[in-house]
Length: 474
Image (tube, rainbow, N blue to C red; front, side, top):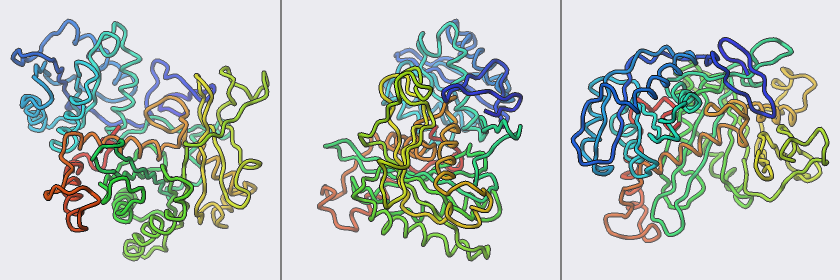
């Protein structure tokens, strides 16, 4: 893996950030502070020296500098004693952060409190537009005696939120940074799409998320969130508009629109493949002509891939063979694209990660549509590599570029990030009312009532302008 000041080798898909390893690209952090939330009826107070808090903050500050983030000392923070998530003191803290023009507010939670965390993210992402990182202020977490490893993991998030690049792939044969195959020319935008549904019996809405890359390093993935018109509807209604926002953001960074759009779609069952092609894919295609006409570019090539984890396929190596890792699973990087795959279609299984516990579960990738990898102009750039092998290599390489970890993950990052963005949107609506003004259920509403409700809920997940183009959901 390629960092700013050194190259780190991998072992079974993992690597360690040694002391002094600096992120590949990092931005300055000049105005930041902290708030330590306490559960008490006592009056909030400014904190100069806290015997528990101060040492951990010092470690965090030093860690951020060690990983290459040019960081100035934190501004005066405070301990906040509140009576529940809706305490006005909490909202007032974010108002202070806005007035102070903070780039980052470090929030120390008293414990793992879902309601409090939801409120913090609502106030930060939706209302104030202040970037936040939350940690748990316990002896086995942020307040542990040696919290360097904990702070190193926090630094991964901080750098992504600031728009940085944690690492790149490295090609030992060329002795240079290796960017992922066809994406290296900055002509391919990679997209991840997911839809999350409420738990059974819940009246919560379904939420769709789309993330899209904006750089050749596949480091930054801003997201767009949309409430679905119907609860538990898997097909994304506003996919065309969502793709349009991602294309405009790409153009903002590159001056033109991408030539290729590589889409990974999560959460679709085999019975819905045709619906994805007929509904979602057609919406994405229709979103392009108007935009591409403005820059006099030909329409983009699409590749659409369905990603699945809900299957019962597992792979086992020969005992004590070189293909077996320490846990008895196949080594990471296993690809199976024949024998048990669809004979008349294009699909493959990829076990990109190392599972230390239990049996590793591979991801299933099913190509619904391809105009990129089988295109002669793309094949000429990679002579001798079959289209199937090129796609498998691109997908596997991406699994090493998940910014929040120092290991290859089990799902390609666009799907991973889209899932996290969906989960964050659900937190924004955690305490909202979902019923229509008429009191009717989703199935009883008219189309007009349903759209009115969707717009009201959409306002609850509209990310602040300050954060829309960042990875606020990390």
